[in-house]
Length: 63
Image 1 (cartoon, rainbow, N blue to C red):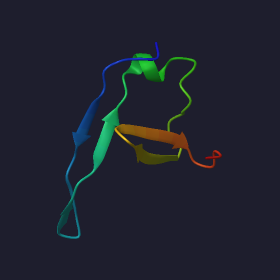
Image 2: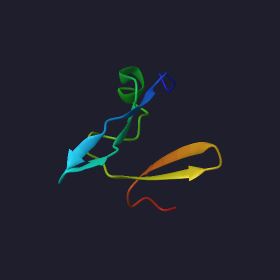
Image 3: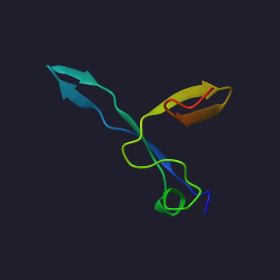
Image 4: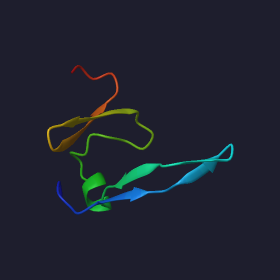
């Protein structure tokens, strides 16, 4: 399955007495477990905005 409904979550954290935002995007397991899903847990990625889309690519991939 290459499509599902995920969610963007903000998990504020405190470090050194300061508060910082951490944003996570949850990907449904049915999408992440699909054989065509291009990432593994721990992969480093490049994240950028193109118009109204969020693009995620493996680090080191040609752009």
